[in-house]
Amino acid sequence: MDPKEIAPWGLDWAWGLPLIALTVMFHVTGLGLLKRISDRLRRVLTSSPGSSVAVVALLIAVLHGIEASFWAGAFLWLGALPDMRSAELYSLNAITAFGHTDLTLERKWQLMGSLESLNGWILFGLSAAFLFTLVERVWSQLEQSASAASGTRR
Image 1 (cartoon, rainbow, N blue to C red):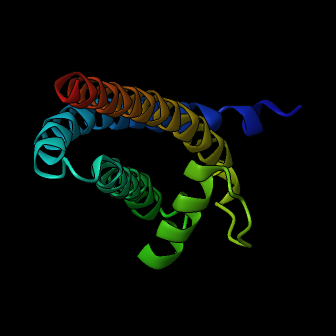
Image 2 (cartoon, rainbow, N blue to C red):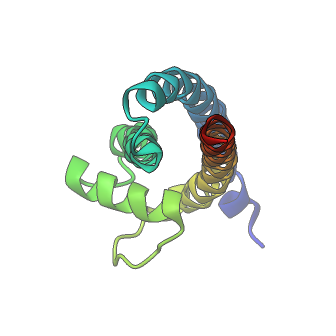
């Protein structure tokens, strides 16, 4: 392999790793905020606890969209894609590992697209863990409510 083709990949890593760190920090901060929101929603939506989980899931989707926009902005700024619409579409495809777009990055930035996909796996893992914990809390609350209601009827 030609060393000239390997050297530019250093730029992919130099841009990709900080973007991974930035989006993970942003995501964890966002999930912390969503925890506070979910606590308030569960108190308000006691008759439909599933609704609070649905609202939080939608907000997590928005969070992922914002994080994809970070990558899209970098791709646009680096000249890896021609316009913001293309950059957003490419980025959402990469971060979700959907991959059904005909857009490709400039050759020298292609590894960075793979790094975004890796970032997506990390972010979706964090989201899945958060939603799992939230659903567990909702189910626990429902069981406690059911136990309290059956105990008062005796």
